[in-house]
Image 1 (cartoon, rainbow, N blue to C red):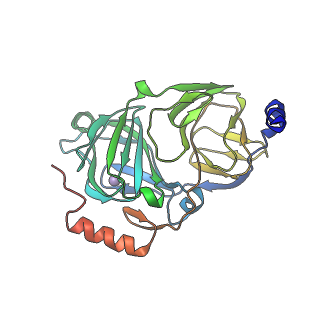
Image 2: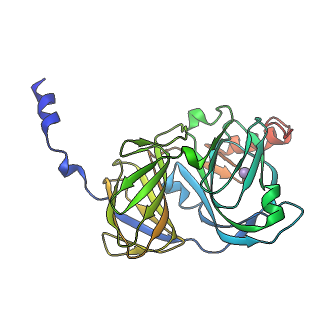
Image 3: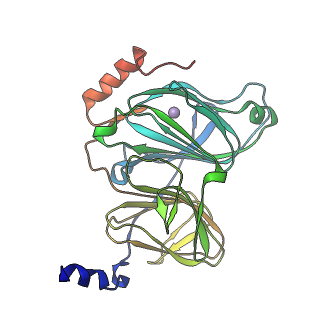
Length: 302
Ligand code: MN
């Protein structure tokens, strides 16, 4: 119709309304996951992960030097159900094994994207070589929720090597697109719902912006450096900025170099009940998950 043609010809320049910075959260404290991962929990499904759904947990292990050892460190056999775990390694080398037959070794820049779905048992360890040599470990683990109708999807595993992760140039920096599409660059991760998971690099003196769909959850976790928002507030290392769903642009400025993790996604607005390694929609499903794990119905490591 005439209306459709008219709509197509309307300039798009007025659609870049800003997303407002709603909250700055500082990750505090550190605890060990197994004996291999000294992490700060940036958010979890018990707190901010409710608002950031489908991103329901983020642990960050800032650089930590491990001494050489003969016995490799890590976290032994344990289950998950109802979501995906995404591990990004910045320094160090990890090895993964799971009951679906998935497994692999990942190093700096690599990502493992594990779909727990209906249920999986896995272990997350330092590699033998890293344990023997020692060195710096730096990594992040993100939990991505699955919508109710996909929580029982078969488990799966994606090893995503750094060499397969494309980079989208932005003014004053670049995005490493792990998942989703940014500026026509598509990341390799297969996801069940629309999202962007990107490593953000800003050069010293950058004055730039990120463009994201309006209506999406959006958050930026700063790992190194300090970045200033449009309203003058700043995010430093270890701080998470949470943005409004409304609006489509996040303006960023920095004096020195910045490294951050961008999390943006179509929200999953469903009831959520989590307990330990299980995140479902009802309390009954959590009880069922414990029963199924104890009965061996999530499989075993070979
Ligand atoms: Mn795990």
